[in-house]
Image (cartoon, rainbow, N blue to C red; front, side, top):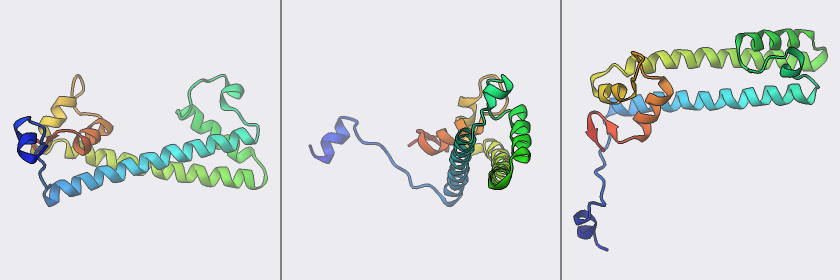
Length: 154
């Protein structure tokens, strides 16, 4: 098939090169996504470390949900109660996790303010059902991956 036939059959997609501001917005969203991946990896690492050392939050507390305030308190008590390098390792990992959580929260605030920009209003309003502000993760997915950018079809 040649290019003309693709065009006639509506198989071509218009691609626009983003301007500098849009690319910076996308970089911010990519960085936030990268931190969320690091957070997930670190959480899995902490859970694996605890399991290898016979510590099981759900069995010890009868609570069923990880990464709640109660779970973080249990993690801190567990880290303080462990002797040797296990305790040191857990304390350092928890410090790193808290730092990542704080940075993700700061990124999320930036994403929420970015969602209010005129060129993202259509994407943001499409994600806003009941709440006044779209969730940062959904907004990032739309801006990075969808067909709605700057009010035009890409």
